[in-house]
Length: 84
Image (cartoon, rainbow, N blue to C red; front, top):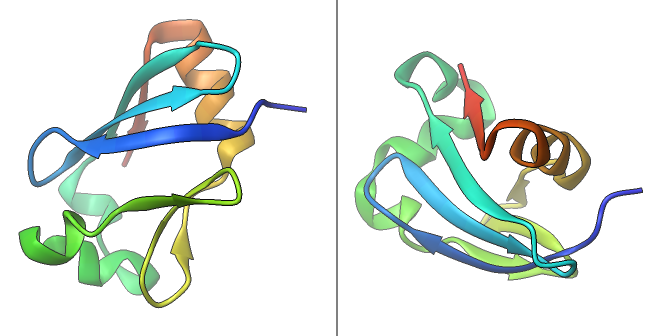
């Protein structure tokens, strides 16, 4: 089981800086090809900037969220989770 996300900050219009409860930190990068379907609203920089942590999840309004387990595994291994 991965630790909860305790903080998230947008770095720019397509990447985030995340910190987990165990101190692991890294970047989440969205490639253009991932911003479809449920993630389509994240194309708007103002909406993307509304990111926050809710109950250990990186989330946005409208129940858009990211799986902390996959994020943690990638960041632990390489420092970055690239969503393509």
